[in-house]
Picture (cartoon, rainbow, N blue to C red):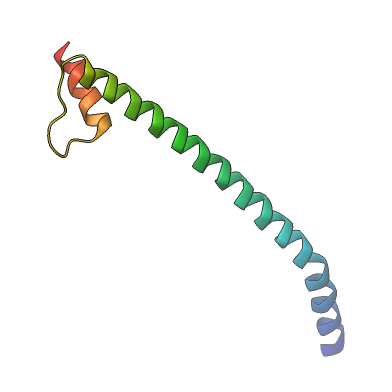
Length: 76
């Protein structure tokens, strides 16, 4: 009985390991896509904030770009 359990565990681990590696690889690739998308969004927000600052609505000291845009929209 114990030998059957060990044999079943061995076969299961041999089958599941490649599947788990494949899932981890897909997860890492998917997270990389979100990282690139986040960088693009951050770049767009920074550009918008700079455009607003160029038009005369100055950014306060340590204010983030998103806070600057929000303050601009709320003032209008």
